[in-house]
Length: 287
Image (tube, rainbow, N blue to C red; front, side):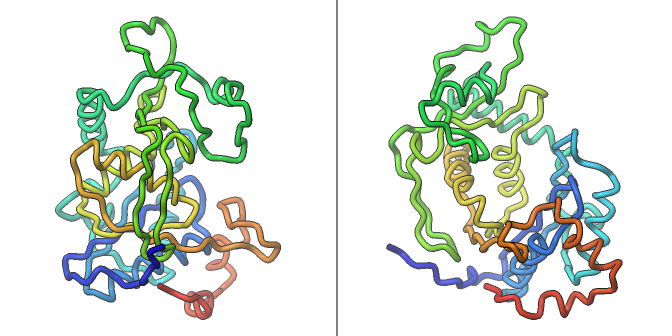
């Protein structure tokens, strides 16, 4: 088993990113992961990019966009490219980048990597003998794999990526070490385009990280399986993937993983209470 080295890719061309979604106030868990990303970029004199991931129209709000920038600045974050300061590979707000997502979708469709699916989440769970209800995206049983768009009339549908069943997708994570996932077992055909004509997270993040020339993605360990999906997308699109570094997640005093519902631990609330960023991050063990 290959072990992680925690070493930052040694290059002044290092490009990292912070990619918050304005669906709520950022909390300490976000801050710790982002701080590690900033530390790794600064260690090699690299560039840090801020990207506003605002594709979730139902949950994203302008007040959270404004709070996101203010709270990150207050905490001590410094990025060199972003929505507020521009840069060579903008725009840095996802809702302004649809032409890039559409072009990637068209390439996947032309290469027959994706197919239209009319199944709902409930349909998928009902089709499984032992559904994993706690998973973010249940393993799809392949019901619509033989579908063609021309066959679907007056029904909503999504587009799924066809995974190579049985293939082991592997990478060496900068923190977690060697990771191996079997397509069709650990994850199934996944959504790349939603029924409301919005690119899904997996596709959007791959397109953006590639276009923004990100060399290392630092994020939470809950996204390890997503990395396997994204590696398949990079391959299908003919793009070299970045390195990955998945940090441990932060929990509250009862051991529950921090989420945006933890208002008391949001950066906005801590800031209002007069907390000092230096004190909040004093005991963090950074990569």
